[in-house]
Image (tube, rainbow over all chains, first blue to last red; front, top):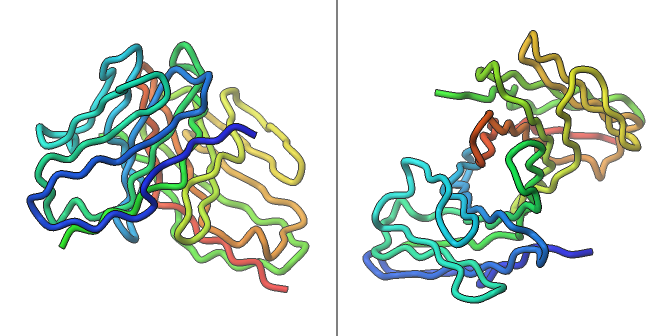
Length: 116
Length: 111
């Protein structure tokens, strides 16, 4: 069964460093997403991406964040200068729906980011 | 601010019983609703989606939607200890791509 994959599973970094989180969405999916979940809190939307551009982003997704689809399979989230409060689980998700109704999103296993 | 509300629990049910999980949402025009299961330390796993008023059944799971009351629920029949997890309600508001999640209800099924 196709699934979303993410690497690394755990990333430890120093405050102020740049990190890149990587995702391989399900191969025939068209919509890609990043969410985060701070320990003990709810899953929060960061950004959605379709047709090689951002389609929607949240208030959390400020200038420190960027996303890219560098090739036909990978989807990345970059945090330019990490802060302590960026420590969280980051989930990539993908959807095959060419439209917004019935938008079933399938999540990857997540990357645990720890900022020291 | 669009919100999704869930009772955090824990909801404790004996093995074999029906577990009933509830969720309310604030955006009246939302059209798509989802239930995810999340085991501790793992990612959300999609278990049900529902778009129309009424019931939708899939195996031991039944999702119920009442748009007039802005209420969606999940019933788990014949609950098993392996169903013990946090159940997340998620709503896709109209004209957006994102899912808005509730805080989740922790379900404990005891033998």
